[in-house]
Image 1 (cartoon, rainbow, N blue to C red):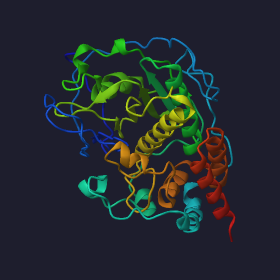
Image 2: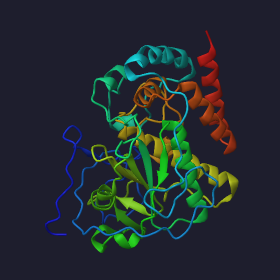
Image 3: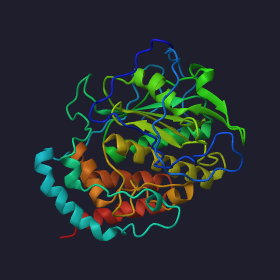
Image 4: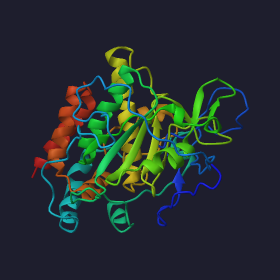
Length: 373
């Protein structure tokens, strides 16, 4: 709306990235024809002004038996805790984590030379070491408890979800809780009636109805950031686009403002049997932890095959593992002080329960490596 004041950015992190897992959107004139082709450029489009609306209560409860589930109030009582063993302090954990990097390195494949069309073939990046992360003023969660401590990962459903999609989002939230060692809470569902006409479109070539991602960040999610949120992560089944000249985007986040939105629209059909559900779940989990990793100030990984690799297409994303390499794992463990072996056990149990055999196998190998002399 006219006169609406923009939210203040963290001066260290004012850049708004079109983070696409980095599944990047196809960029070409919006009125051009043809099928989408991958493009890997980050965007900083401005969003149209619109009034801030009030959230409504969710239409129903999820159908999955997760430990965190959307509740009827902004502060849900069904909140997943992040209890468990912790490392003593960030300063004291550095030596432990440097040893962890050395122990786990043999399990991980170097990323290697990118193929034509891959992310690094079009966007050369130098990566980020554990040491560089620590001195780079990363965004860190509060480790002490309290109502105003930013320690919780808040998940915001946006728009209607089918029963299968809702289960994907709930299970992804449980994966995030175990992955980051942070409490996870679902916020009440927001309805699409909060998105005004100027922040919607029908794609001119293939007719998909889309929502303008920067509007969602600036006017829908930013003003609703809970006081205790390390990050507010929104999932929607609607397709997204980041602005003029772009076809679509898988997700977009603002690191300084701790908000992000990701679409499961292009992840497949979660209702297409057990295998179809697992495919959508794995893709959604991968997007969720990659983008939330950026909110912890992790940059794209260029050393190993890692969930923090930049990717330029769904095909490249499917070739990317859903686990962290040793360098990126050390960053998350240093930030959260979650005990690595306890984390691996929780993630292996989750993967086994969901039928994700490769993921569970990796975490068991990682546990064995930690126990090795």
